[in-house]
Amino acid sequence: MTETLKFYMDLVCPAGSLPALKAAIDHGADWVYLGLKDATNARNFAGLNFDRAALAEGLAYAHGRRKKVLLALNTYPQAASWGRWTAAVDLAAELGVDAIIVADLGLMDYAHRTHPGLQRHLSVQGSATSHEAINFYAERFGVRRTVLPRVLSLAQIEQVVKNTPVEIEVFGFGGLCVMVEGRCMLSAWACGDSPNTFGACSPGRAVRWEETPKGLESRLNGVLIDRYAPGERTAYPTLCKGRFEVEGETYYAIEEPSSLNTIEMLPEFLRIGVKAVKIEGRQRSPAYVAQVTAIWRQAIDAALAERERFAPRREWVAGLDRHAEGSQHTLGAFSRPWK
Amino acid sequence: MSMKVSLGPIQYYWPRDAVHAFYDSIAKAPVDIVYLGEVVCSRRHELAFEEWLAIAETLAAAGKEVVLSTQVLTEGEGDLKLVRRVVANGRHRVEANDMGAVRMLAGAKGWVAGPHLNVYNPESLRILLGLGATRWVAPIESSGDIVKGVLNEQPVEAEIFAYGRLPLAYSARCFTARRYNLQKEACAWRCLEHPEGMELKTRDGEPFLVLNGIQTQSAKVYSLLGEVDSLREAGVGILRVSPQSQGTVDILRALRDGKGDPEKNQTCNGFWHGKPGLERAA
Image (cartoon, rainbow over all chains, first blue to last red):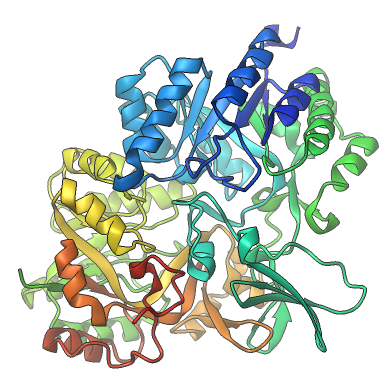
């Protein structure tokens, strides 16, 4: 069994629904992460996520197969809504969730004091990019694992790993934030819905598509994010991934519509001691979860067996490319062509 | 309670002489608190740390409270070394802008919990106060309800970003270098040519954002100059002005004189009213 190897890496997969959770577990996830049907998590989308009954059923399904469930409580509560977040922590403890993913300092403290036996992971929304920040959460709140923002290079991640007892989880695949998570107010600026407080970015309710004489236009709360010529491939108007004009040039001024894919870096992740790889996409379908999980399961097993000889199989890359935003994949901060 | 006025750290990369000239004018300006230091990019080195300390002494001698701000995004050991120097300065208060700085400051007395620590509720603030913070700068996107919710249960000296282009996002990527197709490590410090950043417009010509190295700002100036009464009522005691290359002292004077917002038609205030930041309510 892979568990007996000195080197192991958890595959952490998303679930926006019970069918997605089952798909993840059936296809090889070690952990499944999910959220409740409200603003307590960073994928607060209509029709998505779990109520108490679905969570209980998901836990039974996962635990029956010796897999684990993470509850994401990774938004920042406010005084008026504080009780909803603490109730979610209590629910996680009551139902036997294996760990919670938290960003807010106060909520982390509440969980630590009230349910010390409930494992705590620091969310990527906590913006902890250095071992100093991560060790702060470890010393104060007994954080076991942290999810790194998608801004660090491999050498920087290696430095973090060497200087903290906290397990390091990195994003391996899926939607890519080019901004430091937890430090981006662009959606709040343009639409009002904030990833930090409301759990949404560039929300669907603010999106408008319109055919105009100049082309097909996508807008977010009235702000023109992109305009497409006939036949041009369109992308969801995530506001950092539109085309804008800077000093007379129109281009993807912040980031292209592309997704993260780090599958070729698995041996490096293993070498430097990364403990878990996370797949983004709680808003995606069970079919996406099944296919992406299956490919990453095979890839991680192959990397564990082959180590430095590992190379991504062509069929994995093709399979993953089908799920990329704008059909483009990038190594994100790992390759740093812009550095 | 009378309101204090603060000047935030310079967000842009200005030539050394321009920085000195700017703070010479600030020494004589009506401002109570001045935050100093490079907070955006560790590649910006027009001023050595010792020069920042010299400016701090000049401002302190002019009767200003000086606070040294730490870099918001720390990526590696080099960045952490800079933060440690700021924390260990031994003379001036420090504004912590990430949890790494908070760890270094824990137990020290009188530091400032900066606007990038994501303190949205009284429980989070209480923890930082327990570690020695004595002032809270509200998150950039704070509404009046968020601020009141924190301060009703956890009163403390509170500050808010009240005037300037909002620092909305941070990245490892440099968008100024990207505009010039330069690698970040070989950026040639092109942001020196843009003392107020580079304006980013939508394809229908509307100014939307400002690119400032690894930071993205609002194109519109955010102004709470017309909201002083509701800010005071919410418990805010300090209004922060963000330095611009032109007109900063005029804004400080307008605040002292309580004249409201002289540019009301061009500025926005949405966040304070719980709306999209770029909107203007009333």
